Image 1 (cartoon, rainbow, N blue to C red):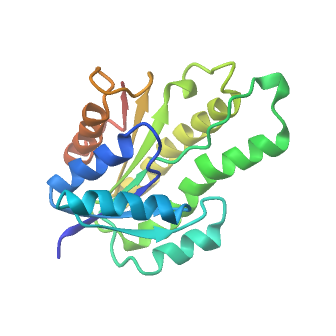
Image 2: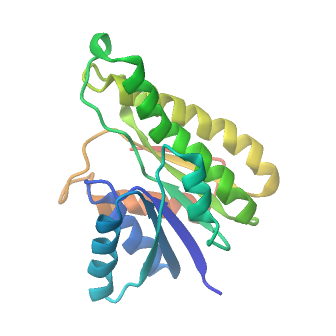
Image 3: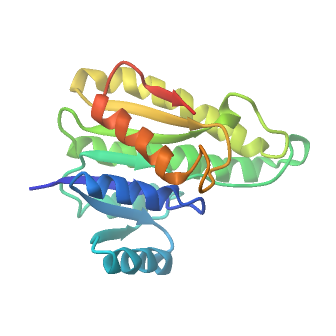
Length: 210
């Protein structure tokens, strides 16, 4: 049986697609999790034409029971990649509690629920890889909600990594400081390679700041 990578969050930057290509090229079966079934189907068909067969499960990241249902039919997880984020352009003084709580439920709460479902299906040398953001290190005025959530997500990764180390499960985060853009240092393909490097090496380096 081949290895399985579960990817949450295709995003708009192209990173999700680059992660699919990279991990598939290394022999992984890819399973996508997301709420928008039409988008997931379109992605599946696009890759099918390229000779890459992927699967998908429907999951609302703000709903723990929905995530649990999506994982019910997944037997094993060798790599969990959490690439989902709630995006909102809003400065801190105008940010409402309701908006902040909802965004947190996607960026952080979704990650926590996915981890809780995935870990029992993991064995030694499996990995959890998370997409971080430079706003966790240097908060953005216009992206105040994401700054809060990404900082909390980064904190969670370090705490989780220390705990799961005892089970031989690696937890890492790629903290991306610039916009992802083709034909630049921050191209999706170059960044996807960083995720593979974290998985392959599984060293004491939990974070790549790029």
